[in-house]
Image 1 (cartoon, rainbow, N blue to C red):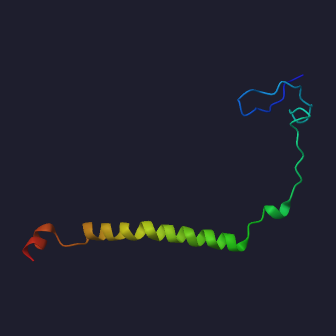
Image 2 (image 1 turned 180 degrees about the vertical axis):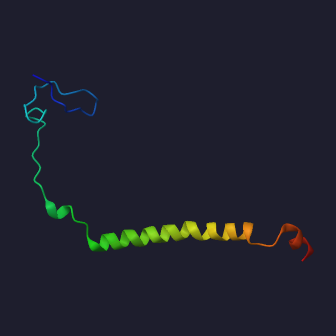
Length: 83
């Protein structure tokens, strides 16, 4: 029989023998109930995350726009010295 695939926090593998379909021993086999309602995100959460993404995008793009505008669309350096 194969050994259990569970790895302890210390890094050692469990020495118990596995059950055939799961590759885990009886002590480490857990059955978790499936909850389909948890898979759906709230519409408010989606809207909030999109708002934060837009805010972060603006925070980074506005300074980039002004930097590029000053570099490429501003008057040349010699013209600034004369003015």
